[in-house]
Length: 508
Picture (spheres, rainbow, N blue to C red):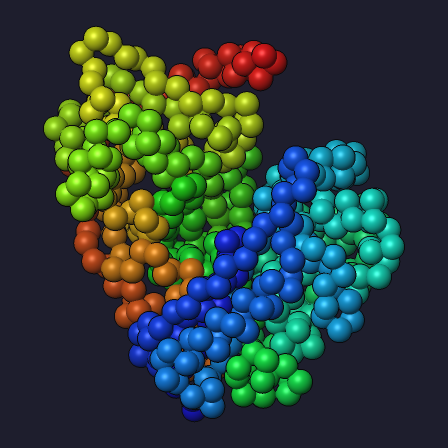
């Protein structure tokens, strides 16, 4: 058998191509960027031809830079941005630009669906709230506003699925991407007849659903040279980026969870059954692991809050760090360590961009509450990290209140590298925090894992424990835990008290 897996991660800013060997080691990586078009307010589109160019160019550069033969590729596999709508013809060519996950134009379609499918039914069937963010609403927007394009569309797919269709001629998706469409029956593992009938949409317009580890075709001879791989190379469908990140973080079985900390942040679990929160605070995706799902809660401004703090409050640290040639966050963290746990009663509400889970309030705004004359900038720095983590704890508690047991929290993403934040998480979550050895490559690594298991290069999903080991375990401090337990109810009360104010501000 060939010795390498090529994993493509089709993100929002570009495609990252990575190469992993049969031991699960990252051998090389190449990135090719592309643009997003914002033609109108709430619109966000990308050209799928740019994705194809990115895949072809990054594949060729990857094999050239690593000196690996195209004949030594065991499979190509994919991770990709979710919640989009890509209209393809029968030859897998795009008919229009892709409407991507960030697009919010389909508000009328969201309201129209809500008149035909109850909020409760949508949540119980799909694991998600009704929202214009999802693919169904975008598909219906095309039907309502561009009927000629709708009629000419053979299949509506996601980013990774469009590339797989062009590589193999087969139109397929997987449970993780299917579950980001507001059409997928999470319990049955198929398109929901109830929703399709309610919106008068034929399943013929949708791709076939296959397991993420399935080999769904081979690279066609007519595209092999353009891509830079051998004709007949197996193609494994892979999964959506969030689910691939879960696999890359080692969240592959019940009782495991991970916390991604980037500009946004989320907590996701691996469970055999969906978790339906009575307050609809969380949602559930399909997983790349067969017979598992991925309950998730995503907040908007996690690392973004920390970055705002650095840019607006920590100008001295930025200037000093630049002169010393170190990260400004290192200097900020040093100051945080000298502030008592709880920032002496100072709270930060992390709603700089409104909020998704757990609040689902676009009108929510950020705030410092409890400022006194004795508080310093260092107190504010600490309160920002604590406020973001309090908000993540609300998500975690929504899962734990449903009886879900989690033994530890794995952390990935750029924001996970700071030990002081890891300690705040451990203290606030009340569980060990495992910082993984590889923080930034979890998504492509998860895709590679899925592909390697799919073609038999890797024995099973446990391979991830070799690919991405635990670098450090941070355990809770009982005294700090007690402080956060006392503060947590006040954090929730502050949000509730400010909701009417947020609504007033929205009218200004």
